Length: 391
Ligand code: CMC
Image 1 (cartoon, protein in one colour):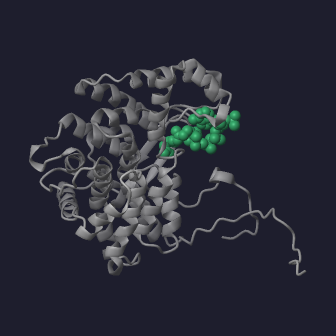
Image 2 (cartoon, protein in one colour; image 1 turned 90 degrees about the vertical axis):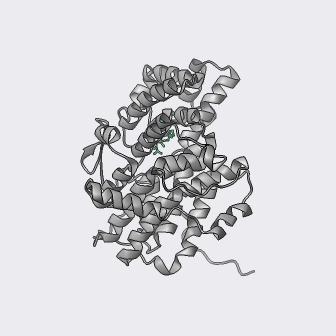
């Protein structure tokens, strides 16, 4: 209800814009649950599509429900050939996140007569379409940036294996998925699937609250995720680590520059609006980093550098007083790199991970009778009324 009192809340630090039954976070204790299930258990036992179902429909699927969901998604992985040509109108130097958001917005043009937000059949169909097509678009953005041909999806493969092949298969018949990479990627995607009202999810809700369709809302979410304070942080962490290594600067000196806020430099992959404790996702990612690199036989000095940075930061008063801990983005990049993804693909991977959460929130908003168009207030601080100069 409108109260007539506008309170100022930069960054929505204190204002809840909605009720939600999807994800629970206790930032002080470092707890994250999807639909009540602890993230640690989900990451161990689930698959990406199972979690997507859980987020979308509220409960774990039965074996039949999951098989049907998986099958429906497989049947929608193809992109229209015209949409494939859309990629050639963009420069090969384009950042894959820009390509991903542009192509997702463009998807809308193919389904204009099937995109009514108030039609449950359209909503269900476009949920499936987006889950099926976003990974294909992301893989094509990757292929484009390295100048390789787009492969057709291979629907005999699992969701994650198909994605890996679309990224790394050069000739369709000679690519074999490494099961270590596949399971590790699935686990990382699961850890990203939802995180309640973060900036990109709030963007999806805000755009959706105007009556815009799922393609437009998700495309807006992708753009919000692109920023380095949000999903773009995974790319920024690896750039930061590489810069420290290449410059020869000591970790201590770098941390001192962060503390002095020299040139606005931040320790990327650290800090969180909600977590004032170790991000539970970061704990799981850190375990994975050692495991995956060992199993792949990859030795990456950037992983040691990240661990050294973490150790120095966590024993420093600046970080302790501000309760800054590693977040989900701190260790993911090292793993993606070991899997063979270029740095610029890290944030698209986050987007694929987050897609089920965005869709679940869009649908929850759509079905909530309390939903109104999102429309923040402002406190006006500009000029008082004055007359337009006429001479
Ligand atoms: N390095 C150095 N100082 C920091 C950092 C950091 N990464 N994060 C926060 N601080 C300081 C900040 O300067 C402020 O200090 P002071 O009180 O002296 O002004 C204090 O800690 C509180 O920070 P804030 O900026 O008020 O916190 P916020 O809740 O507005 O911002 C954040 C949260 C995630 C944007 C911020 O911590 C940050 O910029 N981190 C680096 C980027 C990053 O890793 N983002 C990924 C977030 S997790 C995954 C995701 O959502 O995508």
